[in-house]
Length: 176
Image (cartoon, rainbow, N blue to C red):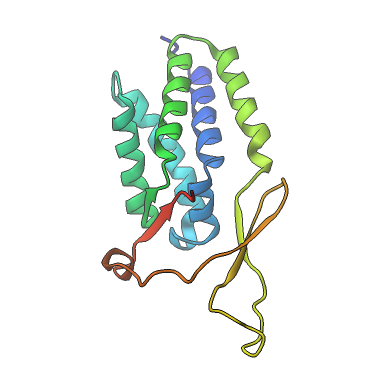
């Protein structure tokens, strides 16, 4: 098992790469879900997650998912409901396995692959709305931007808030 401080730092960089490229965490930080210290919480989360792996032997994917979901809930008031937690957890488990086996070059390659895609940061911005006379319906147009092509869609008005949303929860769901 690789145990040097330098190799442990490589795993920490892997955790950072996974979390910084995760759209749910990006959106939570960018939109202030974690308060004014959201970016510091995201940085802290990297250290906590890597320590979780070192403190627990033979972690299962569901355990990692539960741990990260709990962190997102407690620190960012965000319930992750978009189906991305299994992929994030699998990536972290794969990197930890590479680190444990001493496959640091393979781990560095995995990190580089993730960070190359970092430029495709998730952004959600509202387009300017039409005046009341020009508006034919109550739909608000939103545009998702990435470094790729832009897509603009009109969505029906959202349903009335559920009890959880009224209590201050932020629900993140994967679009179908």
